[in-house]
Each structure stands twice: as structure tokens, then as C-alpha cells.
Image: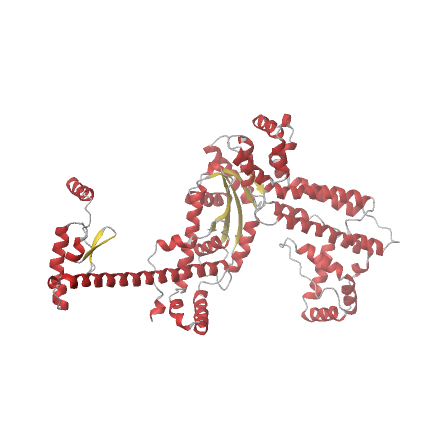
Length: 620
């Protein structure tokens, strides 16, 4: 073995150089450092005249007998012309091959791009063949001479499936690469059941590196086929982190949907993750949140008055559940030129449904009352001033709750931003309570309208004030876990207003230095907090380390599971009763492509690793 290796090293170290005389003498040229025979296109492994001469004499004899040509007899100017002819022939072949390969690569790239679009737009894998048929029909009319080029694009169901798998794998590999640089990361988890009764666990990750670069991506959509207890979710999570080579000791926070399996005191996911972290690092601290949007939706349910919602839903169902009555009601609204053309159904699981239904019902209350009286199905409450007053108040308060909900929704929001909306709403509740107590309805338009309508009536507003107080208590109670992080939130959002004496010792020296700088204070006032800490990192790389560390942790945190909810909406489109045969792996691939943000599939990298071939259908 050693003699063989020494021989290889000896040959490699000889640095043999191709002699230009060999071109005319043996019809050989230097091709990428290797001698290439122009007669038979063979490549000689070692640049040595003996090997080239032997090949010339042996192989040219076979070529001479085949083509009745004596290469040895070609001399002088004829030999030079023959050499030029052979070189030209080789170049033509290489150009043709290069062009053919380029066309194949372009066809394959188009195949990947179209497959990515199929995944992003929730289309079945079989749609690829339909897309190709549309392309070919268009090309036949617009540029028929190029039909063969488009026929090379492979979009069969199998090919599209394979392409989507590779695109998803490429994104996963990119995520593995970028996660190695995460200084801190957080997770958002939520769970939903698909149309085949398989529990699907969505795991999102948001990480930040030391240069304040943020990546928020879907880590994985994990199917759970058996029980979905806290320990089952924990095992799936740990396995997923291991698959992506992500260390648990950089985990900052976990945000969940608040289900018992997630937040159970002893065997919930959060408890198990904390135990695991303590076994790795006894000083580790994990922050956990119940999704801020879920909390707000739960609080909204306490805005209730004298079964108003029950009567509204009952009335709507009476009209809409009967086909004839529903048709007649829409015709009636059309004839009187009403502002709206129909009523809305109420869905408890939809965050904004309650407010929209109440508003529509309130706007059409007189038309509904008139219609129901004519149908001999009078709703007595619609003629009761107290009921109408309570209805008006619920319309106003739920519109504010819906407005808050919309502010909490959306991607890329920092936890401090969404929590500030909650604090502002709590302050508004106190203001509204004080104003309604003094019969000031400035901010309650519908309530003011009904109050003016029944001006001579004596109303008792105690029940309305009690609703406001109850809402205040619910918000204070349900957002206690966010309130516990008040200091680190304020340290991030308003470091110049922090009292240094009341701050932990690790921050005091840095806060004094920061607050003493007028230029930094001016910068902070004209920048978003996140951008300010990026500025600190760029211009003060060795200062304010504790403040920058806190900022990285805050920026990496999830305030809600909004992105999980969006994913589940897309999942229900991709996996329906008609398309329930899609495998869980392919469902994960689709979701990864659809939810990719910064980490887009690198198609060029994928193609470089492949041997590109034309579509078989184009060769038929």
C-alpha cells in the first residue's frame, strides 16, 4: 500500500508539462491539464510522451482501418490542415454539448421554480402537468419554433414531488447552517388536528446572532399519531432540535397556545423543558408565555350583558337557517335600500366574528324587527330600550377589542410592541369606566346614539360599568406572566428612563454611561429600539454588553403564536377531504416552502449537484 502511495506521489510531483510539438506529431492537445486525442477523444492519465506515442500508434491503426486513412502518410501543410480540422471538429462538439447542457439546466431550473410556486399556492402536485400543457399551448400560438425548448421542462407529479422535497431540504440545511451562529433563540408552538384526525405540532424558531441578524422560520410541522400529552410534545420537540443540531442551552423563551399539555405545572411541556435546561445548566432561566392573542380573545369573552349575544345569535339563526326566510329577508333589504344586504353568521372560534356580527345586527336592528313582526315571529327584546342600550355598548366595546386584536396580529412584531398595546388598552378601560360613570359617551358612538334616541328614559349604567371593571380584572390577571417581565421590557424599550438605583447591579454602570450620553439619547429618540441596539453594536462593539445581551434576548422572543395560526389555516387548504392522501412529510415540505422568509430555496445550489436531463415526454 505504501509503495503504491509513493508511486502516486512521485507521478504527481513530476510536474510534467505538455509539449506543443505533440499536437502536430501525435494529434494531441492539452485539455484542462490532460492530453486529449483529437482522433478518438480519449484522455491520457499521465502527461508522458511514451504514453501518448503508444496511444497514437495503437489507436490510430484501428481508426485508419475503419476510415481508410493513413495518418502517418499525412505530412507538411496537409498535416497542419488536418490538425486544424480536428480541433475545429472538437470545438463544435464541445459547444454543442455545452449548449445542450445549458438548455437542460435552464429547463430544470424552470421546473424547480414552477414546483416552488405550486407549493406556495397550495396546488396539488398533479397541477404541474396542467401548467406544462398551458405553457405548450401558449407557445404554439406565440412562438411555435421554440416549442421544443419548453417541452423539455419536466413537471410530472413525481417530478414536482421530488422538486418540493429538495427545495424543503435545502431550506432546512440553510436553517441548520444559520442556527449555529444563534446567540439566543425562542420557540413558538401550537397544535391542531388535520382532516385525518392527525395532531400536527407546529414549531417556529426565531434566532438572533451576535450581529443582530434575525431569522424567523418554521422549524418543522411534526405529526403526532398517538397521545399528545406534555411528554409526547416534549419528546417531539427535543428530537426536532437534535435533527437541526440546535443546542437547548441557548433557548430564551417558549410561547404556546396555553393548553394544559403545554403549560401543565408538573408534566406539561414547559415544565419538562425547564427540568431539561436545569440538568444542562442549573442557572438557566426560561421565560414562557401564553400567546398574547389567545389571552386577549379569552378576555373578550367577559364583555357580556344580559344574554345580549344569545338573543342576537338566536335571531340571526332564525332568519338564516330557513332558506325561504333568508331569501325574503335579502330581498326586503334590497327593496328598502338598506346599508347592508345580509346578516352574518357567528363563529365562536373566529377572533373577530363577535364584533362584526354585533355591528351588523345593530345597524339592521330596525329592519330585523320590522321583518320579524311581519313573519309573526316578533323579537320582543328589539323593542326594549334597555336591551338596545346594552347591545349598543357591546357593539362599541367589541369594536375596540377587535381593533386591539388586529394590532396584536402580524409577523415580525417584538414582544415589547404587542405588550405595549395591552398596557394601552388597560389604560383606556380605566378612562372609559370613569367617563361612563359620569355619563360621558364621547368614545362610545353607538351608545351615545341610543342614549340620545331614548333621551327621556332613565337608564342605569351600573351593569355596563361592571363589565368594564370585569374586563380590567381579566386583563390584569391573564397578562400577569408578561407583567413579570416588566423590567427587562422597559430596559429594552426605554433605557434612558430607567432608575439606575432600582436596577440590577449588572446593568447600573452601563445605564449611567448610556444616560450620560446626549448623542445616544438623541439617536434613541429618532430610531426604533431594535435599530438603536444595532447602532450600539456597530459603533460600540466592546461596550454596553449587558444591555445588548438583554436586547438580543428580547428581540428573539415570540409574543404570540400568530404564525402557527396562519400555518394551520394554510394546512387546512392543503390537506382537505379531497387531498387527504398527501403524506405528513410532504405536508411539512409544503409548509416549509410557504412559510420561508429569509431562507429562500437556493435552486442554483441544488442544480449544481444534479445531472440535468430533458423531460422524457419531450423525446416521445
